[in-house]
Amino acid sequence: MFETVSVDDAIQKGSRMVVYPRLILFIGSLLIVFYWGMSNNFSASFVFLAIAAGLVVGWLYWSVASTKWKVWAYDNVRNVHELQKRAIKEGIIAKDGSFWDNTVIKTADDRQKLDSLQSKFDVPDIFMDDYQVPPETQIFYSKSKNLFGLIVGFLLLTGGTLIMILLKEFVGIFLLGAGLYLVYMEYRRVTNTDPQIILNAEGISTSSTPFHGWTDVWDEDVIVVSHGKSSTHNLVYSYQDGNENMDIGPLGVTHHELENLLRVYRGRCEEKAHH
Image 1 (cartoon, one colour):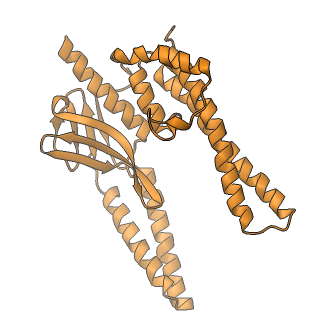
Image 2 (tube, helix red, strand yellow):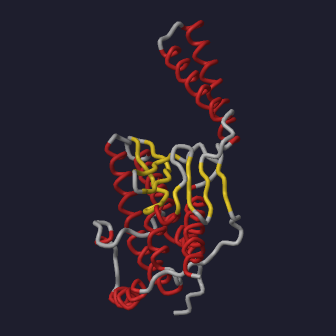
Image 3 (tube, rainbow, N blue to C red):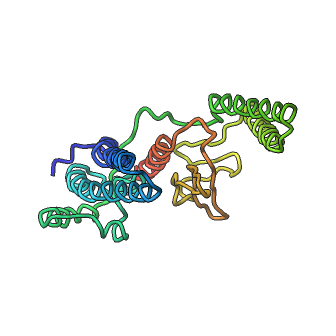
């Protein structure tokens, strides 16, 4: 075990090796079945056949490729706890013991190698600082996202107004209301110049939660929260009197960047405490 590969590099390879090919195979299978259906008196049954074929082909590839990636990554990465957590979130592998984990295809050699690598989980991860992260980070509303939202809002206002005047359709009122709400929300964000999240080696605070030191915070993470057919990335953490759950979509930070900031500032705090 040379352990020369960083967690970031391993996750990137996992996306290229597992996630992207699975998506391509799924879409490719759909197109092939649809093409075949168009040549053979296409009917609604071909839609279900196409979806089933895409899911099966995608799963077969993932079940093999995810195991191969796991063997390679666990062997070459030092911080396997962080690696496993991020790989599950990115869809590269399934959670140990889950239904999908029990469906993966493993050869006898794969099982032997993974069993031999399990001992690495008995060793705590070591902190690897990211020196590009400043002593403190303040995260604000994203101006580019605000501008895009305002444009969409004004388009909805314009479209709703024209439909009401020219066509006298009820949908115009709906579009007008949606446009007004979106413009109002984006205007509030544009004029809000306060940081929404502040992080440093001492702790974390948000616009809705006062500062808490890292010793008083636990389970900090960025998770996907489903809202029916849509989803958001939310900053979550717990503290003694409650918990934070903030949608970071409107903010000028990606979920990958925020995950790294949480890891770095928590690590700096713990490293400082050990010295």
